[in-house]
Image 1 (cartoon, rainbow, N blue to C red):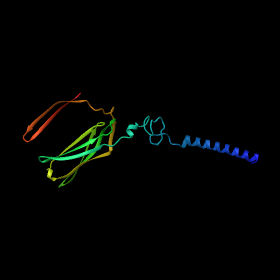
Image 2: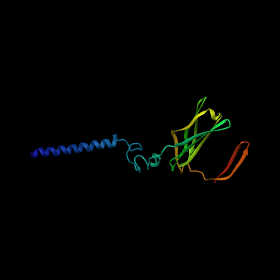
Image 3: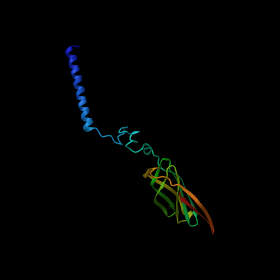
Image 4: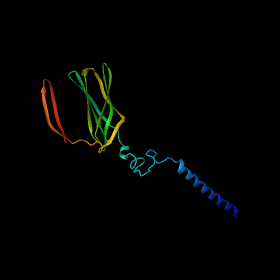
Length: 186
């Protein structure tokens, strides 16, 4: 290698380095997207990738959907009672509002009843519906939760109330048993 070739290579490398730095500066100043909570990077003092710090908490990002454990139906006189168990597997977050649909099929067709409810963090809730029909006419009943409309709140935003059962009264009326529960919010 001649001295002149080495000198040309050094100037070329220096020129490329300066060109790269100017290009990177232009990109960083005017073209690069600003840090956000949706850029798949841990930046802007986030504690995880796109969560924590200025973004939503990491626990909120990894929430599990509400789960319908079971649905049962049984007859009572000329009515059918449908009961479903809904579980919130997230102990730190309550579903302050969620939409669900009860699908109920009898020999007269399928009835879809849209409802809304809430469930506290880590809680099991029972949804109860009563229909005016006989049990012999019912084929099935099920509950479907629309997870896309669930509104989540932390336990600090929606705390579970402290309640106490004050009294339980049972009365026998003909062939029925009526149960009344008196609860106080303390």
